[in-house]
Image (cartoon, rainbow, N blue to C red; front, side):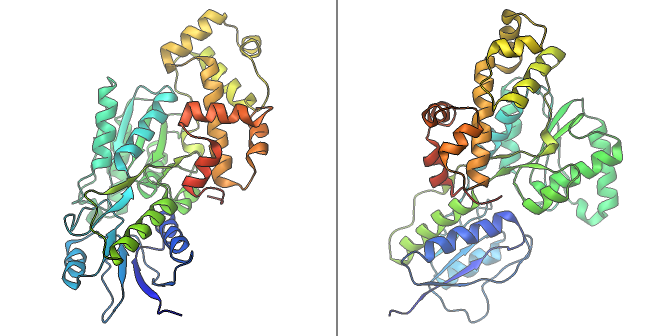
Length: 387
């Protein structure tokens, strides 16, 4: 049996992102490949470097500081960067989640909920980081014709969390309501929900809070539980491992970074709000969300909401940019995505759970909303395990 290929994983093990990356990498390395891994328990903000005396064949790392990039370049070790930081960009290829696509997913999510007031909160732990994710979100909101105040904590970690929270609470009080707040990640999102509680701001009634990078633990311990963007860590891990495999075989560096699209919004209570100003229209939206698993028709909505069909259609187009039928399909596909990602249910049962009496109707709706079939979505995203 040939000697194993030794790969160092300089990736944190304390977040859903890091754990998912490692899972995707090891899936690739253990499929007909004799890869063995060096990996140690690490926190997200630990300053990682190659271990002393390590002699292996390749490295996959979150390169978050220049020292590690220089170390890898000097060692002439094939390496792949899975961070948003571009250290060593010209000499170390990068494979990570597409931050602009993640920002667009967040903006589209809030637009679909009817929000017209927005804000963005950057990271309190990355004072020197150029936040392209936040830049992209603010630009997209402004391009749609809305303002987007931005909070940049800067060097506030040195001030202590109590003072940070006071400053953050003051900024949140200054925002119009209801407001859609995107944060850099779920860690920052949890800080926002805590500051909202201090400021007397109800989540999600006054502020709908979405974390920019889903983390299961941060989401669960937030009050209320926090919605976040799933950055497809398993798929990023698999793609990064495939890239490293090519490098270790002597193939040339890729011309540009490989950016993997985010998978979905993991919806929790922190964004469970419809932000349309018309109470009757909001009632229609709530009715759809409560009954999408049934064979509902427009007439069913009108029996519950005292509107004419013309007023209902006009209100949906004016406030949401879509028809009631479009909304029924969107909610059903959103639930199908959740079931594909979080359960091993077969597509036939998922279709029935989402209000379709035949699986091909779900496939047709899925193609229209996401441009792919449910089976292809599950295969490409590594879905089917509990989030």
